[in-house]
Length: 160
Image (cartoon, rainbow, N blue to C red; front, top):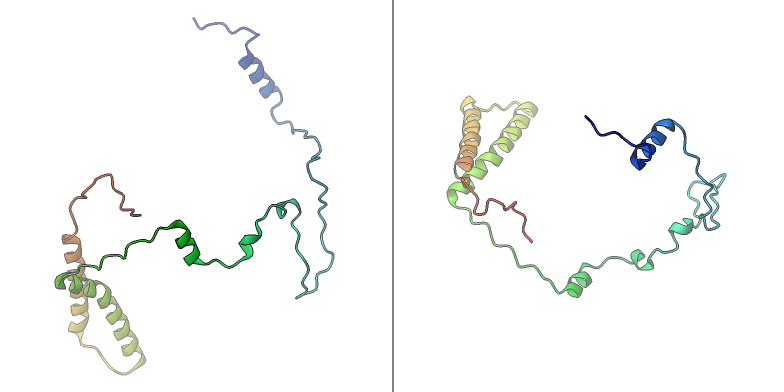
């Protein structure tokens, strides 16, 4: 048998009050925390006219240094951290050829299409198949030589 709920239970009375007032709009007291700021709108603003902007209480605590131009050399000198130069990419000739096929074949195909369309020149049929073969071969080589597993399975690849 479920335990009986007593009418003095605070949760039960709070729940009943919520259910009874469901759908009523809250009546809030007037906002006296405006600090004397009155919202006004300029009736007519001429195009190109300049006038001072004042954002009331939002603009009072703004740091004036934010208006000065940012100098990255000062920021690095203050922190004392200078990152190491990145290592050069170690691409072998096979990987370089694969990337050339993956990136170069579509570019050459696009240029050939533009030349054939704009002029009376023609491209041999085997040239298109050569570009398709270069793309697929390069892509296949890059996928086949990808590492099978990570050194650290919890590593997401981010480096500082």
